[in-house]
Image (cartoon, rainbow, N blue to C red):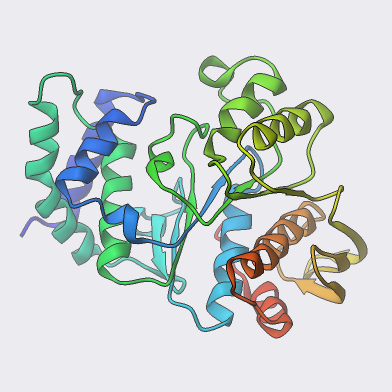
Length: 300
């Protein structure tokens, strides 16, 4: 088997193929792998600010309720293995090597097939992640989009719930120069008839999210609209806040991540958990409180 250093050399060398937005390549690669993404319960997250933190909070709450929970985020803070976690534990270096060796022949098959490009860095690691979480039989996968949403490699999935965190100006060369254009790309993760949760948004971004949700008959629940919070205290240990959610009111919730913006992320995560009730799954208040209090997110 290749060493971890050799695996990383191969993976990072894929950056020479650049960023190619689109779903053809990743769809074919996953088809060759047996479409593992189609057998996962996914919560898909796009946005500009707070994607990773919101994903970490959702994952922490699901874990607190006893679910085997996969978490896929980018970029990593220190080591590549941070990108794929199960119950807060990074994927092992050995597993990275094993997955890469198994997937390599299919990478070459895609690149040698007429009409397809060589899979990019993000396409390859996303395919590795789907295969990993499928084979480990996680109950849920919390999946963070890489760039944009509509044409991001993660958007091959059919999620239970789509989550859009606060949208701001980023990657304007690829996503558009206005908040409306960027919101349109980020809202590309909204699937017909599937629930959408939105963090608090600038008016221009919210209008576009609402428009796309309406076009796709997707129920939309937004922080600052149907869901509201009140910050009671914030300091270097975290924040205490009250929340009026989709179904319930919560008093004196504590989130361990630092900063007022993390309360908005926490509210988004709680709304996502409440939306699971529509899917027949009731996440108890104790799991919400425990998950908020225990969440950790590297470098934040």
